[in-house]
Image (cartoon, rainbow, N blue to C red):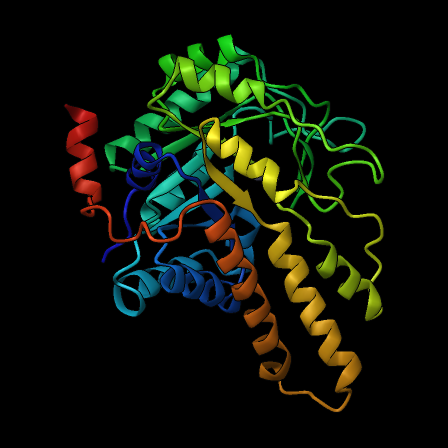
Length: 340
Ligand SMILES: [Zn+2]
């Protein structure tokens, strides 16, 4: 089927009370792995692309590949193509014209400037509302879904480097949704981007009660969890065993993500886990088969490692089995809904 609006996938997840993985891609192998896992587990899936991934893939390359996967290779799998951390209105317009069915406008940070520490400063609530409203007007006119963000996360994702971490204020979140009309809302509940989410040896803590509160206030808005990679120990150990140096990496335990989903979290963003799986697999081939120089000899196992992990994630989030539950909607259907 054609790519579907992300709103449709998340509305269905809200009805069925399950989570949907939103997986970042930069290349063909990651995309094949994720779509293959979705087909095998019969899961709807969100493919997401950051602005640096856009740049890396010559802007339009990834959207062409994703469309091929949705229309030709796996027509039975509902797939949305989403811009992760859209920094400005220009990028939103670009992605709408590339055929993305969803965009995130990250109005929580001012991507136009950096402070002395090299971090993007937080935007005020009013400025966040203003830029998000502008993005919603542009995207909804094309039937494209919009994710906003309120509060700031920690950590590093591509060059999305946040300054101080501010957890989401539920009251503000409610006001933000009402004023902007976003379809999905990213909450800051203590997760961070990257492989080092928590100090090693300490108890992993998230402000899960924020999810309960916001879900009660805006039950029709899909809540989004950024920085949700589990950073599985076996992957980190494998990377380090074969010459890598990723010591003390810690992620969000799967059980905690499942708890978040029970409380109303619907979109679960995963990037780091895919990176680790690929790196571990490639390092292993390089150490064990030093004579190999055909890229398929190491990118093939890397792809398989990602696929295996994504299958586990789709099962853990409760997404598995839901691909055939609902009738697809087009961007034109959404345009009419938003206009009405
Ligand atoms: Zn993020």
